[in-house]
Image (cartoon, rainbow, N blue to C red; front, side, top):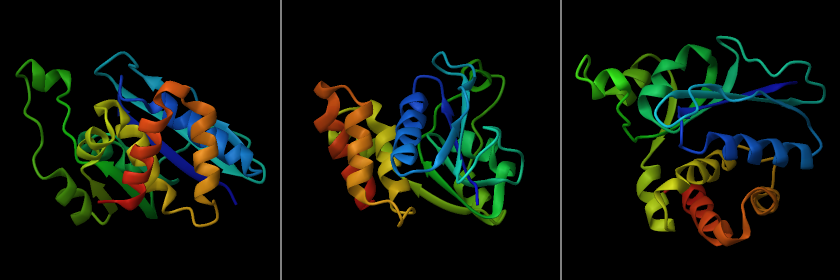
Length: 191
């Protein structure tokens, strides 16, 4: 059975590293894996989406509406934007961070209020966390992606923590490894 994970966020937040980490992890665990290219405005500020599909045999990297088992979102508005891709029994793991999109920055719109509550009220299974605070505790605001990967790891009982750490070691430059291991552990603990 194929599982579908969407990683959504804003350019510059590290979705490429997150998808690379997941792809490496799942390949190491013996799954057939397809990872899409990053779609969207990958320069800082634009909406970015990556698909990760895995199972015994996966033919396409694309996830359609209503097919995502998990949506990992680095930002609340992006989680709300892609909620229609979530399966009925799927889960959204979201950093409660707010990053203003261009219409908000220019004053043409305001950032929507109570997004987490609205997603939950719409029936979504939402696991929201202050990933930015945990990333800062680990040593860098840029580690939000790895904090979220730590949280995601708690939903994959079949994959041991050691496998996640091995994939992290393979994907992160040595000089940033300790910081990222700390970010992963904080996300996994889910403070």
